[in-house]
Amino acid sequence: MRSTRAPLFSAYCLLSEIRAAKGDFDSASSSLESAIRFSSDLQLEEASNLHPKIAQARELLEKLKKFSEIEAAQKGAYVTIAQLLQPAYADGYTEEARTLKMQGAVHLGILINANGDVESVIIFRGLGHGFDERAVEAAGKLKFSPATRSGVPISYWK
Image 1 (cartoon, helix red, strand yellow):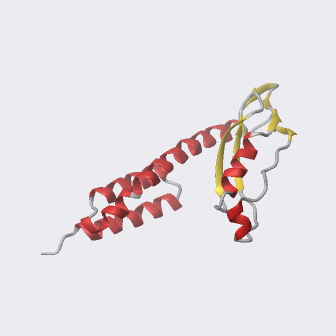
Image 2 (cartoon, rainbow, N blue to C red):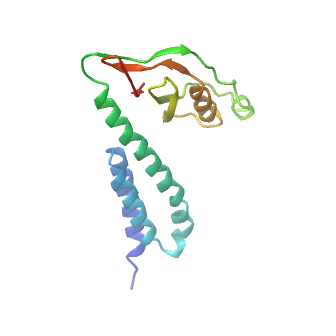
Image 3 (cartoon, rainbow, N blue to C red):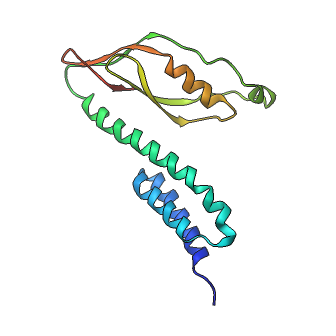
């Protein structure tokens, strides 16, 4: 008799990818957890690799939830956007990126708190090979005048 565990593992992994693509990260992480439960001995290594992915998905989910709440609050009349006061630059190429002759841009979303400091960073499109880490580090050094609503400083996504 053939086990149904292996097809269910693959099905839940695929379902997780579909749900993540739709932006339903809660359901996507639940699907990954189900995939782990249905993994066979042959897929045990692959299933164990899912645990860090689930943790990353949950962390991203929390950031995105905060993003949507703040984005709703920063719309409307009497809102002024945060203005960059102090730029920051990444420390150049990593040795790995130089060896691979890579170049490009890392696309980030940053949460600027009511003090004008960068509170959180989300990588929307990374390059890997050390670029992402350097971009996040540089973003953390940025300083802004805070956004305001009716003259009161507010958090702002940029």
